[in-house]
Every structure is written in C-alpha cells, then in structure tokens.
Image (tube, rainbow, N blue to C red; front, side):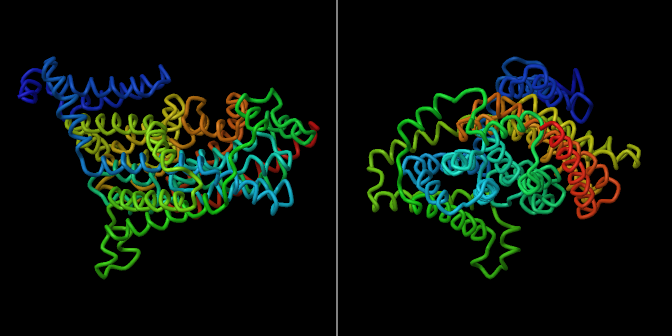
Length: 511
C-alpha cells in the first residue's frame, strides 16, 4: 500500500531519490561525527520515501519492514551471536590471568627492544578473529614486555591498533570477513572477500610499515618525542594514566600461559572446522571449495560456541576461576559488544531501506552509461570517500554498510575485477579512517589496552597512518589502470621505503 502512494505522487524507486538515505547518513556522519543518529536518520529518510510520507507507514517501514526483518535474518543473527561469544571469551581470558602470565613468560625470552616490538606485532597478527578481541588481549599480554625494554606506551598503542583492524580485514576467518561478506548480496561473500585481500593496500602496507619502522629504527612526528623519552625511562611523556598507576601498584592476577594459549588455539581451530563443516567438507568436498562455499555466519557461531564451552570447562577443571566468576564474565562480554552490534543492526536496516527503493538498479544504470575512462579512477576515489566517512564516524563497519552495497551495484555483472578492487578500496579506506579517528572504538580500546593517554595515542598514530594512506591512494590509482595486485603492491612498497628513508634522515638531523 505504501509503495502505491509513492508511485502515484512522487516516483522515487530506481531514481536519484533512492540514494537519499545513504547520502543523508554519510553527510550527517561527516557533520556530527556521530554514527548512531546518522545511520538512524538515514533509515528514517528511507522509510519516509518508501511509505510515501505516511507517518504510520513510516513507522511500519522502520521497524516491521526494516529492523525486525534484518534482525530475524539467520545470517545477521549469527554474526551478532558470534560477537557476543567473542566478548565473553575475552572476559574469561583476562579474568583467568592468562594474558598477564603470557606477558611474564614472553619477557624472559625476548632479548631486545626490536624483539619486544616484533613480538607485539606477531601476537597481534595471530589474534585475527576480531579487532576487539585483539585490542583487549594484546595490550594486557605485552605491557610487561614493552615496559622492560623502555618502549613508550604510545608506541605500544600504535602496534596494537595497527595489528587490530588491518589484520582482521585481511583474515578470512574473522568477524570482519563475515560482516563484509554479508553486505555483498548476490555473490559468494567469503569468496569475494578472499579475492579482495591482495588489493587491500592500506592493511598490507600498514603491516609492512611496522616491520620497516622496527627494522630501520625510524620514528617521526610526536612519536619520536615519546620514544626518546621512553629510552630515558619516561614511558608516558605527558603523565601516567590512573589505570596504569593502579596496575603498576598492585599488579594483575597471574594465571598460566596455557590459560591464554589454549582458548585462542581452540577458537581458531573450532571456527575453521565450523566453516568448512557448513561448506560440505565432511561430505566429500575439498578444503578450498568447502571454505569458499561455507556459511560463515553459522560456521563462526558453531566454532566459537564450542570454543567457549571448552574454555569454561578448562578453567573450571584447572580451578583458576570459580564457576560464579565464569558466569559473571558472560554478561560483561555481552556489554563490550553492544556498540558493534548496534552499528551493524543500523547499517543492515539502512541497506534494507536503500534496497527497497531500488538504489542498486539506479546506480548500476548510471554506471553502465558513464564514461569508461572514469572507471580507472574510481578505486582511488572510493578509498578517499571511505577514509573521510570512517574518520568522521569512527566506525569501519558503518562505512562498509553504507558503501559496499553501492559499489556492488555499480559493478555487479559489468566488471567483476573492478568490483573486487573497489570493495578492497572500501575496506582499506574504512580501516584507514577508523585507524585515525579519535572516536573509533578500536582506537579507544588500543589506548586502554596499552594504558596510554588516549590523546597521546591519536596524535602519535595519525602521521604514521596518513603516510600509509597517501601511498595506498597512489597504489589504488595504479590498480585502477593495471588491475594488477602484485604490480600495485610492489609500487606501494617501493614508495613507502623511500618515504621512511627520507623520514629517518630528517629525524636524525632533528636529534
């Protein structure tokens, strides 16, 4: 009935009006720097247009056709359950003292400043299931080690942040892969995600940059001041945080290394088994085919649920956490994931509104009739748009939810290779903007994990993130013309090395 009203008075389906909801969400996110209200107002706009400006019809569109529909979708519910289980496992591992024990164990085996930084990076890369999981674990594990070798808390926060989202966005077995693949309708989402990994220049170059910084011993910008002060014994430069003071004063509960290692191994193994199970691995399909055809949502839920049960049973058998304390961790873990769940729910609803207005068909029609030469510049342009949106809103996932469906609509069935490069540009830009943003959950959690003053982390990280962003932009330009991941990445690595060598020379002159 609502659609009939729209067609009679104001044709909006498959016209420029169908783009209004995401445009409003993007504009408001850039202006207000607040993602929840921006996404909701975008949803409300879509509902108004769908309902022909009828108030009752609008309410029906927002909730019955929108939120209730997307939150009753099996895939979407699976992703939300996976996030909740992750939060619970992080709480259990921290409460058991496994994180602190691993830190102590590592500090006896690492022999240099560079070794401590590489170990932090390596651990961050190993914990690739989820960025929250990463931030909440790596900081507490590596703080004792980096403190021993006089590495500034700002540098520790940078290493944590740079191995959180950038690693998760190139790991096929992660909550990010599951979320991104959920936005790629009409395609095998995980398969598209895997094909996009070689083009995710921001994530790949961020990891390469960390290795180069540690190997070349180069720091610049505010980070240089923090590192010089840390070498003299001042790890904080602008004063110690209250959390750090409390930790240094009373210490943390020390468990055993196995209390951290076993749950992480179980989580990774069980999630892999869960995913290949849903892809038909146990019904005579090969591993690669099973993984490509897996139902990530169901597989990750099954795997993480089994890993959670094993972890609880393991802790109770070892008597390192009482049963009552184990149960306390469950609602605490849920609370940690509420923000991500809310963003996802709003992003899915906005997508439903935009889809029902026929935005994808309108955009696809536009692209079909646009000049072919402009196509080559689109990945670089999409990267910049994603950076701006994620920086302003502080969320990668909200950015995915808004941009990826539009990109898929542009190229689906027209140019598959350019669709993959452009999806990579969306993901890379979203991670870059999120990486720089002071209101990003991951940035805030990285500061908390390192027990570093948040503003110190933001100001020291931005010059490094912008360096990689600039190189990534030119890499996407190269990819737009060559469609070669290898050529574009080699170009990016060479430029990044030259920039860092120049920065090293300049820093040496300043000292």
